[in-house]
Structure formats: C-alpha cells, structure tokens
Image 1: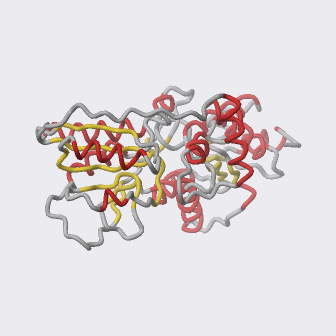
Image 2 (image 1 turned 45 degrees about the vertical axis):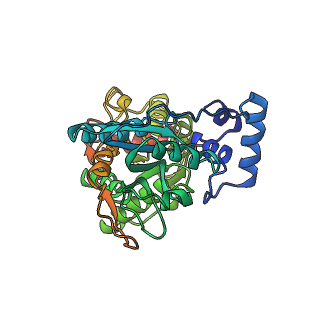
Image 3 (image 1 turned 135 degrees about the horizontal axis):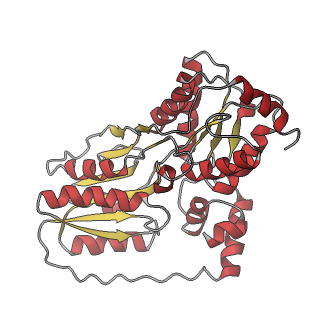
Amino acid sequence: MDIAAAAGCSQAAVSFVLNDTPGTRISQQTRDRVLEAARALGYMEKTYTTKASYSGLDNVIGFAVDQLATSPEAIVAIEGARQASWNAGNVLLVTQTLSDPVMEPRAIEALTNGGISALIYMTIYTRQVELPSYVSKLNIPTVLLNCYTADHAFPAVVPSEIAGGQSSTRHLIMHGHHRIATITGEIWMQAAQDRLTGYRRALATADIPFDPELVIEGDWSASAGYASTMKLLALKEPPTAIFCQNDRTAIGCYEALKDAGLRIPQDMSVVGYDDEEISRHLVPPLTTSVLPHLAMGQWAIEHLNPESVPGKRYPIAKLECSLVKRHSVAAPRTEARQILDGAYTSP
C-alpha cells in the first residue's frame, strides 16, 4: 500500500513488479516508479522462513497462495477450503509463495515433505500461470484456484467475470438506463478486461450503442473512483448510471456524487463489484456482485481427484458472481438529467 501510494499505481502492479511475475504487461515507466519508491521506502529487502515443523501429519492438504495480505479474497478461499476439508476430517496447511521463482518451489516442497496428500495452488489475481516444474512432477492431486495453465493440465476454477459484468450492466438496463458508464480497473488485468467485455455484451444485447467516452480506466482505488466520476459528470451528456468495477471504486464514486450535490439513486444509479464488507454499510447500501471465493475454495477441495489421468485436458470451471441487489439503483429521472446537465462544465 505504501509503495502503491508513492508510485501512483495499484497494489496489484506493485506486487507484480516486486515479484517479477511473468506474463504481466506493465510499462517500464511504471516498473521504474515502483522500484524507485520501494527503494526510497526501504522495502527492497526480502526475508523468508522455510522451516517446516509438521512432518508426519496424515490427511493433510497443502494450500499455496501467492498473496495473503493484499485483499481478503485469499482468506475467504482458504476458509471455503477449510470448511470442505474439515468436513472430511482433513487438515489444511497454507503457505505464501509471493510467486518468487526461487522460494515458491521450496515452499511447495516443504509442504510435500510434510506429508500433504493433495495441493491447491492459488493466485490472488485471476490469470494464466506457468507452474513451477516441481508442481507438474508431484504425484498428488492438484487443483488451480483463481488461475489456470495454457495446457489445461490441472482442474481449475475462476470467477465468471464476463457474466458478472454483463449481469451488473443488465441490472441497470432493466431499470431503464441507456447511458451507462463504467469505471474499470487497470485494463492489463484479466478481471478488468472480462468485466468490460460483460459490460459491452449487455449493451449490445439491449441494442444500446457503445460509447467509449463512458469508459474510464481506473486502478481499483477510491481516489480513482472519485476522479473518474468527476470526468463523467463533466461530459456534455453525462451518464445516468455508473458501473464501478469494484467496491473501492464505488466508494470514491459515492463521494464525488455527494460533492456534486447528486443523490444516489435518485440522481445517479451506482453498481459496484466484489461485495466487500463496506458495501452494505454505504448510504445507500451498494448493489454489487459477490466474488465466489468461498465457493471456489470448496470446489477446489471437492475436485482433488486421486484418479487424475496424466495428459488429460481439464475445462476451466467458472463460478457465478451473483448480483446482490441493495438500494443504489433506481430508474432515471427527468429532474436528475436537468441536475446533471448543469452540474459541471469542465473536468
């Protein structure tokens, strides 16, 4: 968080740069800013603890995840896996790998040396991964959670993000909105791309023309939500509804609308995404979509198949991001349009 604030980018970008995560499309300029900020703040030194003290345990399932502290999704997925594991009398052991090319294989090896009978491999951001060669050689059931490989060699489960973006936008359309804006996350991330695809599909299905002016790229933060909302209000023809592609963006959107003298949902409808705890405490409570990480954790345990066939290709399972309807959406009003038209004349 400190480095992201200093470098002017998202926590995700900081994580990927510092861990040199393969397959990410981050500009060299952003990489330089992150590294400079990390050095200035004293965050470049890494320390690791690799000693395992649980050797000999029976019925143990290993859970390797790249990030535990960035967001709550990892903990939710682990809890889903724990519930399903305990129901069968199994123990779950967790290690954080940081996607480090040297330490990740060692962390996973520590789990296997400790007697795990299966492995769940998770990334905090949905993406295609290249698994360490050590994982491919394990002779135990392995499931990928929130990630997948190009060869589909392992069962994998991810959120159905395209359908989630489509459902969020369709909900606004069903309330009579035709000029719907969206504030994305960093567009190099798969979640942002998929939610935007869902948004566009919903518009196309309803025969609503796509307007690129109504798409603003953010970085998942509240400050980006605020700034992006102000840009949308300054348009010659502002939207009547805004689909914020995560709840933190929606928090900034709420603040911008409040500062503009607009009411939610009377003057502007707002939809979020992720169903973070704060979304139900906003005023009004935010309509949003649930990231199914609890169900994904349970799914992973249920699909640790001891009879996996070498060379088999597994389809990627996609779990629904259910829409939680609260009180931030209403039909557009004529008086709201009049307020919007006079609200702002410049960004």
